[in-house]
Image: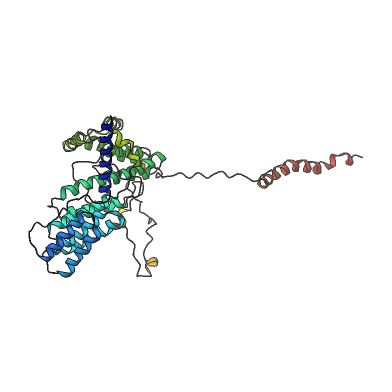
Length: 428
């Protein structure tokens, strides 16, 4: 029994010592981009010394050594590797300051050495810097948008790199978080009764992120919002139900969507075989978070990307703001095409000579993107204004009651005045 206690105490001491060694940075982590050439050149000796310091966590000392190499041997063949090692030292050091310095160093490396194989790795590290700082869907999405832009830059600039598949999966994870953020906004608008805003958000969500794991639910809520906006949006609701049946054939909303289409007397489409195979692959390869992960998920700052897609091409265009379907389109006779832009006017007489775009000229019928049969219906709004009933003060109540009292006494007084000849004073 004493021997067991002795071995147990020794094991605990060994574990504590290993933890202290790891926390102090004494554990050696191998560098990813070493130079294997065996030579005793001074610049190579400096580079090897800096790499050993990086592996042991002595980042400041390593950067001093690498800067000595860069400034002293400006024609060295290891100059590019030294600049990359400086960026890697900041990346390994971590922290807000370290990651910001690492991003700047990686961008400088790509600018000076765009054709090297390590340029694609540097771009992937930049994407990874912002990926590690992503917040949950209900938080600020600035880092997620930056990570998406940097991964898109890698796929555009280095499409044949070995880091391209990794960046593509990173984009699927990032877009899952961005789509979930938009989904929560759309659910809030739908629950609140702001149907035009909900339909606009959810429609843009599915168009921008079709690989989102909850795209079928987003289409269902979109159709529900359009159904509450009146008969003129009946076609929009039917289109959303159709997309559920066609593009998400294994969804739980397929049968309710078919029932809705049958009630609306609209054709039921056949499921897309490509979408069917993709959705089947996603369901078979999706990893469900365990009980421990779900229990401690609320304490993590990182978002959960376990539901992100594992196949399919992510969206390669940045999201753009959309116009709700309840907003009338400009008249075709006005000749307007494109986007609305703002610029400083140079012609001061434009307001006097050009017609007002807000007015409809006589003889022209204002056109919109809605059917003519439902043009008489009022356009739906996000909120209905209901004025609050203000409590009346005592003075206001007294002033309201005063006219009522005078009105009741006036006929009596007038009756006495008019009936004076018939009174007792008029008798002989």
